[in-house]
Image (cartoon, rainbow, N blue to C red):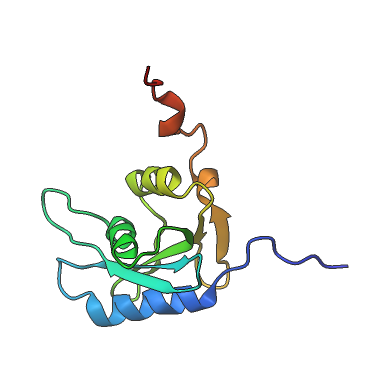
Length: 138
């Protein structure tokens, strides 16, 4: 007996991010695209804004774009590099921000036929949960 994958990969999301990376990432300013599935089923996309001072990753731009569109609950996210680099896992900062904003979000990682969707918390062993360290206000 086979069991269904508890974390199936949202292929439509991967295709959306790949298409944005292919068509919207041009030059050194925009090298990564991200796509996320909102709780209501919509797909939100964004690109990074690279700058020598840092600049926000595509995942962080996506969080703002989603909020601007009224999508405050995201279920799954994926980032794809330009120039056919494929899926790129989120950096440490993005992992932490995703955990803080969406503690149950799943992140698509892997390559080729070995893609998997995993809870963001699994990407942060010994994680820091910001809310757990806030002082109660008197």
